[in-house]
Length: 427
Ligand code: GLU
Image (cartoon, rainbow, N blue to C red; front, side, top):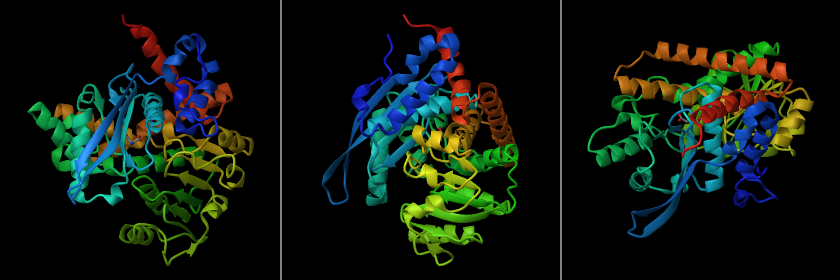
């Protein structure tokens, strides 16, 4: 017996959230899976979900408790792999969706990993550095029972960075009594990190956008690009688009939105955002309302912030020819349909932002072999893997007459469920 809404207790029918979006995406791929449909329910249930209490002493001496999660969605093709997010809105249902998208992403790019994700429900901007370190170490200690270089390998995500990975690696290593560099990726170079990892997600967005632009006959030189989110993904992508001769005409972040038809000065905007905490107040462009960002005339739109930013309410206003998803889950299924009907090509997150986890894979391999590659080698291998994965998805979409998202899910879910069927059920 199958149910179309597995783990319904996490679904509010009025707002299905990221997990509800993911379940709809699975429903769309299921008819294309042939005999593997027998296993499709596997995709609708995370293999293992851990919820932990994270108590820390604040600098003022009081005790604060935060809720933390680590979800291993699927490990049929290898250890769990996926980032850790610190955000005030993180929930178990959101982490379940993010873990599931990692399973699909890792399989779409053919990395030998399953999918996992973690998070702590906290606004890290309200913590001192010492509080952040104590939170990270206690969370790492609580999830140490399920992570490990052969079990599940965390990495950075929204509001986590190399320093947070260093604390997790150190905490895990203290438990083990030995330095275990391969337990996390996205570490500082000095302790087993990989060249190119910091920029890899944004670089991948650019590489995939270039491949997609070529397919639809869009010349990127002088093309207008709009970017939502100026973090590690959107910031790097915006810089690479500008360096390639594109006009970055609009940027939105949590603090504001700026527009300049002739193209914003991206290095100056990044410097402003780094100093002021947001693009708000940037003198080199005009401030626009958050809603107006979506209807700015552009060729390429890069949502690189959070989930469900493009929905039924704003999809009709988008003027881009190409949407390249830097974020995970930025487009709802209703918006997918609206954009497809209007001839807008959407390159899905599971291909477009796979550059980060691809270089995470390189980092994990380098840690195992204790032999480190050059940045040129890393960037060349990254581009080759992403373009091959994009081309395979493009061909699948043509063959099956589906969106690129459903095509990516066909490629990925076939790989996951073939592995599942070959391994069989235990016991
Ligand atoms: N957090 C990134 C993502 O969503 C990277 C995950 C990783 O490197 O494991 O793909």
